[in-house]
Image 1 (cartoon, one colour):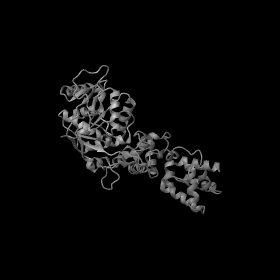
Image 2 (cartoon, rainbow, N blue to C red):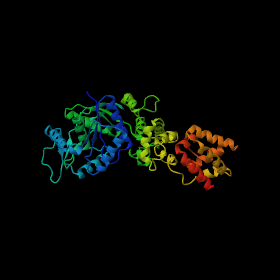
Image 3 (cartoon, rainbow, N blue to C red):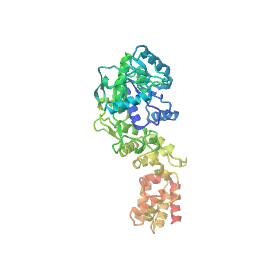
Image 4 (cartoon, rainbow, N blue to C red):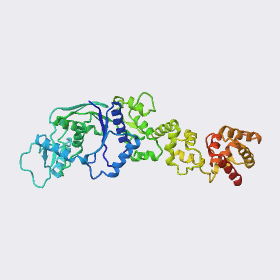
Amino acid sequence: MKVRTRFAPSPTGYLHLGGARTALFAWLYARHHQGDFILRIEDTDRERSTDESVQAILDGMQWLGLDYDEGPFYQTQRMDRYKEVIQQLLDNDQAYYCYCSKEELDALREEQMKNKEKPRYDGRYRDFTGTPPEGVDPVIRFKNPLEGDVTFNDLVKGEISVSNTELDDLIIARSDGTPTYNFTVVIDDLDMEISHVIRGDDHVNNTPRQINIFKALDAPIPEFAHLPMILGEDGQRLSKRHGAVSVMQYPEQGYLPEALLNYLVRLGWSHGDQELFSQEEMIRLFALEDVNRAPSSFNTEKSIWINEQYIKNMPATELAERVAPKLDYLTEEGPELEAVVDALRDRCKTLNDFVDAARYFYVDPDEYNEKAKKKAFGENTSDIFTHLSGKLDSITEWKSELLGAAVKETAADNDVGMGKVGMPLRVALTGNTSSPDIGITLELIGKSAVLKRLQQVQNYL
């Protein structure tokens, strides 16, 4: 049987990290087995579903690179199919109309709770043959088996067994005729020939009910794998209060999509002590039996560390392409961005870090950091810069080795330590005390800009 997995979010908000990890694990499982990955939008909750949320899901999947082989399919476009199967269940005496009013159900629930019983529907209309009460729009309930157990082997949690006496007769169509989640998901998985349902463990309690509907339809039952939840660093379920939980906040924060995927795959799955995985390695190594049963904790510091490793190891050409859209000050006269990001990569943890770090390669500093200039500029700085400018002006081959040597010679000629030349030079060039190797910095900024900035400092002093 061909492996076919699916990701089936409800478009009632953004694509959050938990959903993204579920999509990733389903995608990896399909890719590992040369199977198909399907995207399905479960949009039957028309009050809460929005077009903006649908787009946010599609954008998040695209940014992460989780390509799907089929879809997106929309449940709202499959209503005729759901009605057809509901009618089939009614005709086969596997479902029935329930005329309980809200008041009746509330009273039943109150009585059961008073008797310290589990609140559940008591099946009072299961075999009803009398005259329906007036003024009640009935729901349709599935006839759940009254005896036996539902047992399935969860590919993450192991064997799970639930007695049918614990399950009441599930509503499969509301009083207005719209189908409910636990019913539509079964029909979708059946029609789309889903072989493996990989989803969050908040759905574990739904699975026995869904299996009974599969059985009633005499349909093949997929394998199930329920992933443990992701917790925040405080041990509570991940939510908005933990910061960026929408996937599309991460590109805004300067994350690389492959780095975020790498971090997400390690939330609940491991392969020895390995931390960094290429996409090819993830696909080759991923196995559901290696998914932890315990919840995982999201750690912002660790996610940034992984992003930093990807920045350090990415080819300079590709890194420049990722950084460029964030820089609004690029000029044609400035240095090649590829060379700049290569020089700065060891100092940057996110793409956003390049925004400030690369600025002085293209734009003259319009001010000098207050602490930096007090520390760097001394009584003889202007004289040293005059000496240095002469040396730099005479260099015809503007290369980092020659430029670095000129700075050292200036220190020796003026009988001062390198700190008396290098530090004020950095402040003059960048406005602050931090930059890559001084020779590389000089080479990338360019001869005319360097001499101009040295003159600006001398005028300032």
